[in-house]
Figure 1 (cartoon, rainbow over the protein chains, first blue to last red):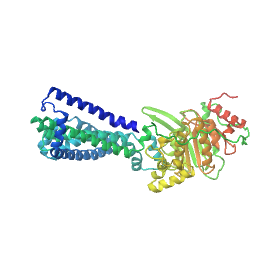
Figure 2 (spheres, rainbow over the protein chains, first blue to last red; figure 1 turned 90 degrees about the vertical axis):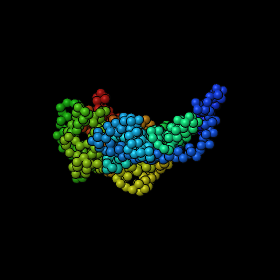
Figure 3 (cartoon, each protein chain N blue to C red; figure 1 turned 180 degrees about the vertical axis):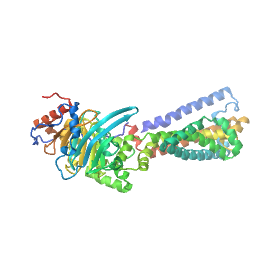
Figure 4 (cartoon, rainbow over the protein chains, first blue to last red; figure 1 turned 30 degrees about the vertical axis):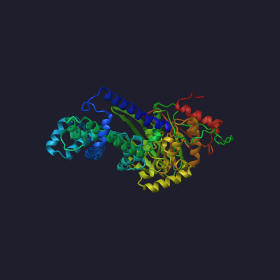
Length: 255
Length: 315
């Protein structure tokens, strides 16, 4: 137990601490101007001083991420089920799903701004658009991974197609759906920030944009710290939920 | 560190009473075709199926196949697997089918279970000729792979057949637990399949199969993937939990000894396309223990079957 705690928590923190100490030392030794590279101490100070500003903008971004991810999850699962149940729908929908990822967001985001303005909507669209792809692919692969012989076994027990789907396909899909969701939630954060970068009046992306322009580099770094913490927390929450739901996997993977 | 506990499968030595209990007379095998793969095989196809039943002529056979042909289609290849195969199994009878690997034995069970509709011929269950869709649910299938769902614990896995039928989950699980108790597996009710050994998993799969209450059991090499000790353990277990005459059992195997230990009758099938080329009635008293395999009568029957399988030279 303690061995695991050391490797999983203490070791990465130690590496991080050494890195930060080195950074602090170089900035102080070189007398680097803070607009060029702020010291970790200054960033920490900014996190405390600007906590209201950062918290308000972080909340805006978090809301975009959560709404966008929720839409991506629901849409991704629905599309995956449609693709799974019908070969015709698969041929009709799957290319569009893939094409949606080929559309460069750099081109799309300004258009969304024109159509939906500076509010929440364009960010949620960008966020759900990036998050839904890994979720859909994960769900489709998962539904497909169901064991044929097990499905046949249920047929010999007289199970209907719907019941076979719920009893075999859905549980088989969960591991890769969760993998997709973990990727999805991480890139949803990037999607929201990108949406804010293109045009917004609040949010961490917006804050970083204007702070950089004003050479308030320590504030940019403070926002990055918050974003990283947000992404790690959301990822961890999904991973914890996954561990709870897929308890049985512990025995399979440790075998 | 691995926290996985290996449950069950005590690799105990066979503690059979040494006394041999067999009454089989060394009578010759009813040879239908001593030289398989000649045109003479056709003779059998023409015989009325009733000829190969156990003689209870008034009761319709539990399973009756008449002139069943099936092809295995894989892309452009069409492989004939069953060629006008006929057989009948009486209610309560335990019939083993032995044949070379890839001879279409599994296809035969798929046909009976209703997973495959044969190209030609009819399949009757309890005297009624049924199409494939109506045969589904009439028999319980146990395969070489236990097909336990890794996300369900033992109790939930045992309940799968009931839940597939639409029995409410709580009732299904509690009935499963009762049955696990009966088979003395209730100690593992909350273990996941990955925590169990192969032999234990197959036992759980067997309980799941028994819970279907289907009168016909189809066993497709259920012990083939297990080590010899575990297999022998399960042979004994199966005889204890499956008292003769209650269920109609069709066992597919390539283990001649297994067939002789478990079955009332052994059918030998030819290489693909499969046809029944010989049969042997087994009358050793039950329960048949491992020590029986050393009895001269047993060895004689084994030799006869092996000759028909083409794996032993005629003595």
